[in-house]
Image (cartoon, rainbow, N blue to C red; front, top):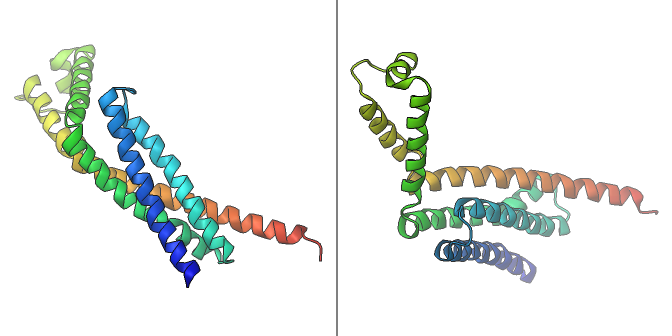
Length: 195
């Protein structure tokens, strides 16, 4: 019973510690402007923390000699807790702290879109090739594109949703790889031990 309680503490405390660390690092980067692309730093931290969490979970499951599915589940347990916590942290960070992040990114995309229109022969040529209604002006087109992109990609809720999906799939992949690795190493170790 004591071993199980110790495992539960690890499963809950380590993801909480990593999520808090992620948020602290993002806040420090934001206020110090240490790294210009805070999103990339956050992604790298998430990938590192997921590998560590999955490894710890699978290792604890392997100590009990569980089957591959149970190892997968053992790896996913701390990773799932981390993914949920980090999704809330991502939403909060972009909603309340770095509120200009998506506006800046969207402005860059709109500048590139406008430059692409000009490089392809101007609005008259662009509107013919992309099947845009003839009555639509370039300003209306760009305004529609901007509002669509803001709703779908460039706001905190879609960012948190996409992060939830991506981190969950990454955690499943890591858990599967780690479980198979532990099972493979356990079978190789059994074969090499003389009787």
